[in-house]
Image 1 (cartoon, rainbow, N blue to C red):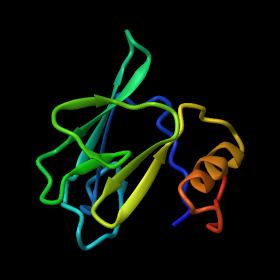
Image 2: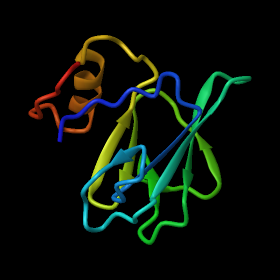
Image 3: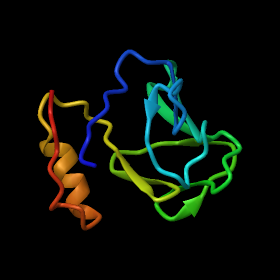
Image 4: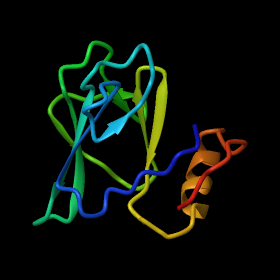
Length: 113
């Protein structure tokens, strides 16, 4: 809870509960390999792809099918976990914290590195 993961420099990331995932999230409702995040260098933007997960991937409350472009402050629901996509990979967590407040999660502590 409250973690920040940088996507900078990554073309493809796997998110799920399996230890082999780029980002491992321990959530019993999450599939081992739940979602991919792909970077399109031509468009300079990230896309979310449901990796045939059991419980689906929801962006801003809408279940996605296929590759879906991510926009700043999108709420990504994976099982019982909510991630907030921030286009700004700022060195501080303020942007992330502001985005979390938008979804009523402003009380979480955000760790920066």
